[in-house]
Length: 252
Image 1 (tube, rainbow, N blue to C red):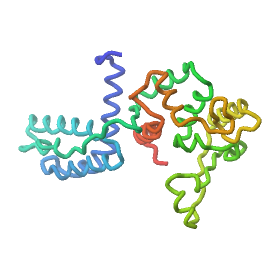
Image 2: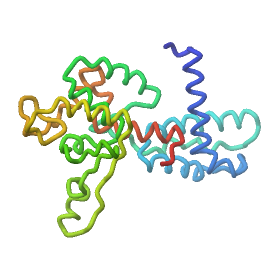
Image 3: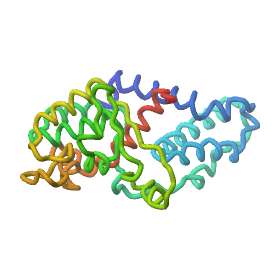
Image 4: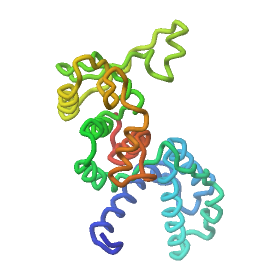
């Protein structure tokens, strides 16, 4: 798809309108444009950066610069509050375990995943991470009894969740973490169950080692094998989903 492709232009236009509505206008839209200050713009950017969406904050900076340049040219403002906007940016961290894709890149990734040539268990596991938003570690160590397919839920005991384990061990009562399962997710779990060994305690097991969970690097190797090495990681799937849902105005 070329840069001048109409579909791509329309996608960018829709994205700009979405972020104007969700992030810019609620703060700046109530202030006369000639009275907007750098501090007001900082409030917009910090709100986005605080939710970890640094790439989106970078786009907003570029769009705000264009908006106020046009306002200057049209004589709507005498001074441009975006002159020093670059100094407001939080530094983007080097991609590590949380590399993730933008929403417009997700369809192409799904096509690549559907054509995954490797182990069926890895392919199904990646699909399940996408459908549930679960953490890779939670799926790796998930046991068969955690899945109630009749009620379409995956229940993870609080004591097995990293951030709650210390509290549970200290005697605090923490509710179990319940993840709803869509019809597609239930079907994937059923397929994984059909592949299990008779004495397999985990939903996903190591190759030739039914008593052990799948290895830590399995998911990332699967992502690498379909051509997304350094573009996406298993940990980044949650960030990708979170960003996409926000862009779609999901408030759940």
